Length: 445
Image 1 (cartoon, rainbow, N blue to C red):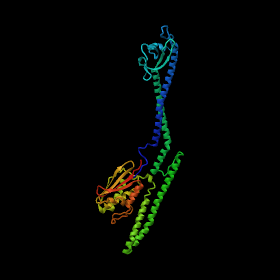
Image 2 (cartoon, rainbow, N blue to C red):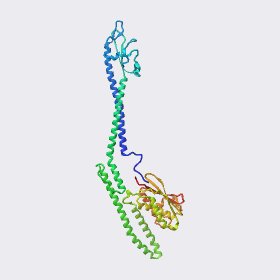
Image 3 (cartoon, rainbow, N blue to C red):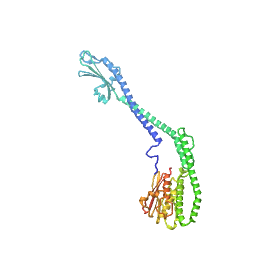
Image 4 (cartoon, rainbow, N blue to C red):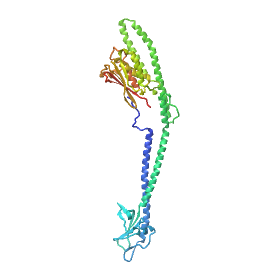
């Protein structure tokens, strides 16, 4: 089964960096957008209170008691707004139920409390400071209240806040753009590395080339060394397999000819060891081929074309059996398997079907996703027992000694598929015979 090291649910490095930067940036922006206006408001309110306390001192100095024992304020205050109706600046003096008010209050009063807030004329929101003090002529303390309209302060604060948010928004967009450029520039070597790997995979190059940052250069050197070593091993395995095949072919042929000249008793003793020797040679040559092609990273083969070619050959070999193969594979389908290996895989399975099918062999595809495709080869033959599905994939297992073969075909198919990170599964076909489901990787785009 193909196990991918990537997942579509995992974001890319670029996405991770941009998301982390965006989250931190927006947290900072929102914190700034909330805290700075609150600091400004606190500052403006404190400044306004300081001014009101100055008016409080000024008015306290002017408060007096007339000859009738009533409160009076003979002087004039420095700010003329106290004389203008509903100007936004007010004062009141109260003692023993008696109250004096500024002309700016006109016929209204300051209402409310510390908890709910204060309001004045025309529902104005007020900032209020109070003071109690004693006069020699009055037993009860006099309460002096100075109030200022907060609407202007709120309007100023709103303008400042809007301007601040506009600046923060522009700054956030600018920082995100710069961050995206920085991340793109920083990840550019990895993009270049991906292009080089694609060239290697497609057969356009045998190594990774180009200039890379010092942090990535050791990885490039190690990958190049690994690619060179891998290609050398593959070429050496291919050469050894071919040399061994040619070296043993003639001696075995000579031995078989000489054994054929011996008497029946002697032939019966020597033929099994020779057949066992041939099986071992076939098996190990098959395993040597499973090392893969030199350009395995660029492997790309259309199974539909190979099935047609193999079926044409099998129609000639097994013409006496009158078996029909139906190829339902899509012509556009490709698998990431080298051509000769795919011929070995599919050829063994199709040949088995030609040996055992009654009339029909069907080749079609089943599940397909971004990583693998399932190719199914099934026939209408007798099939095999379910208990034998796993054992027939082992080396040298043959269910029928009367049929030509070494018992290595299905084992080689299984191991070849495994070498490409695929899988061979045997089950019962709906046609009545054996169903071989072959999972193979598809080329990456």
